[in-house]
Image (tube, rainbow, N blue to C red; front, side):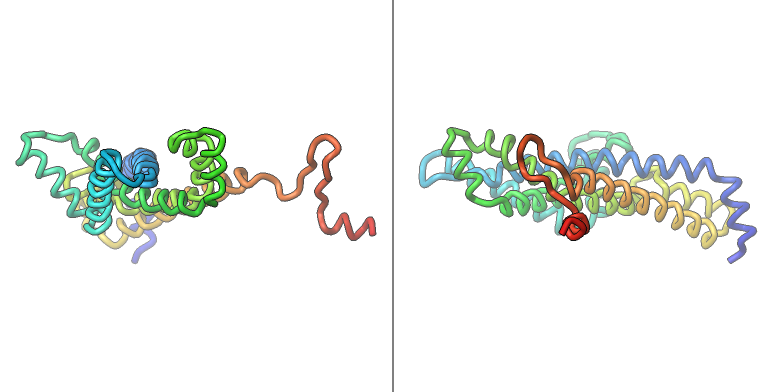
Length: 252
């Protein structure tokens, strides 16, 4: 590996690397947001009580079967295969000529939605059942309970897993080069094809991916700490004041 070549390739193609990185972040961010919304909706639907009998039970059973099939299929197949099937299959089966960027966002979104559905479902199940019973006792239905009581806690609890999905999507967008999406991997492959310096070109790309994932991880950890609030705080009114352990020892 020649450091001179790395510097030369980076200086000559930095705009192309930057454009590819921007497309990667754009697809990953939009796909993660939409996928999280899909997962949230599926998680809420799959936790609706079915009841003992009647049309509601039959309807929810059918819906749950469809949602389970969706989750299992997209969790059980590689994204690169999904990209090929959806992008080329939509044209062959339905005559839909999808825009590559739209197809990329669509593929990442539904793939992320399948994973987020299980994450959200696990987050909902982890909430104490007493909170559901208390909400029902004051007259809330399932949707009201979810919106006002459960989901605010679930969102906080699943934030680390959601951030992890975002980081995974940043890396997994590289498979979208098979449908011609000009993300970072596709851009690097084009640059390496022009200069025949594959190792140096992809070494630069490796650094760019690391910078993106490392930065996103640190930002998400900062957000998590902000949501947790301060470790020591003063309560208003005549309530008890929370003190640091060293302060209590000094007063003693």
